Image (cartoon, rainbow, N blue to C red; front, side):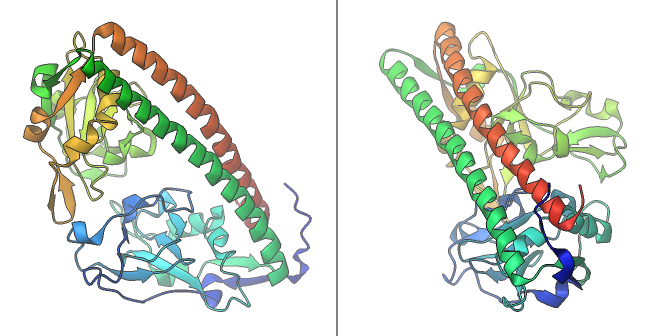
Length: 397
């Protein structure tokens, strides 16, 4: 892509010359801030923070003392390959492993241009190359400061930033449309269940609806060499599915030692513990896309439903919509991690419509899903456009 840029006035410099990591501190327990942002609240390649936690609902620990303010850039310095860069649009607190970055002089580097400097492929490649450690690689701010790039004059910065923010805000609008559709789906599903119960559909406890489980998973020593057995991180549970990809890890155990924990088609995996209370108890359905012999870890719980009574896909749809709020009320916090256990799940209950009604509702859900897919494809195209523009400006793939 050509942006017709005159680079004659661009200056090569290091990031530390024009940006700094804020050291402002805050005590999250004194009521000064009402939101905290942890690593799991930030999404890869997404400048917006969509989730956060309440400091009053958990013991954050001493690492959470770094204050951030609207307009500052948050950068996750752990597992830099996850490419977590976000622009704060509210006050809050984060851990000291999240850098709070701001420009030193807005007359030299525009604050609205900085996020795109740190979103470009060369920046991520540099951060990954400078990272230390194997299991949980990290980078220091002193390393990030040395990153070099070509800085345009202010007028050119504004023109580029305006273009990129225009693409970004349009992408967010499209994503919001997808979220609205998802909320509509959940509301329709819940109202249909209520009407069904009023007409005679019954509820039953999980203990009576499964043929196996709830069973905690198996964890082992992780490695980065794809040695041993494939397993999952809890981030594999997304949008009602068990997803592979970047969520697949490896651990040093023999396949025979974990044969009882191999994930099978139509297994339902539930998040046992998470720092975000609303992610605790979420369920995902295994429907392909995982490496052979993949096992589930200890922070997930497996259920195998009796499909003669409850279709596993229907169970997950209900679990993540109307039923989740009831389950998460049972969660308890330990060292900042919200957890549920097998007994909580056994005591949980779901509505059991007749099989024909389940099939009909799943058919309607498929219509919603296809519409959401079309919308999200547009969002992906806008993300690709942003990447192309960034590549034209800063280089990289």
